Length: 163
Image (cartoon, rainbow, N blue to C red; front, side, top):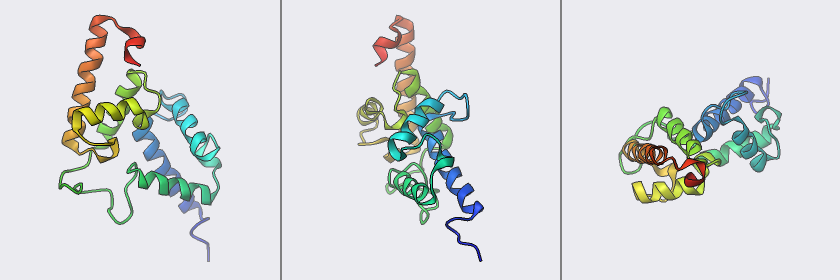
């Protein structure tokens, strides 16, 4: 009988969950993707490794617990579907990816964890963190960021104006 903590299925499932969270935080994290370097830096800060595949079973489990706690991957008992506590639907994967991409466009390298994005979310959606966004609030934040990017591009402000 195999141990579920060390089985290949468990490892693949763990890596998939880590990469789902990474995609939400940084967008395209595939090799050569726009968010890859930021993802590797983030992973190294949290685990000491630059690749999720090199993590031990316990390190993967600890990272997944942290990601669940931060709302980046669904909690097992919630199933990741359905309403927020207030009864609204959670943002879609496309919304998370768009938020991360707009953050990178603004020069905010920490993805959904970036303090400047959190500050924008706080002003726009009136909540303390990106992890508490509903779909409606995420749409408002995306629209606001798109407007800000367009305004900066129109004025020719460049990267300095964005950071």
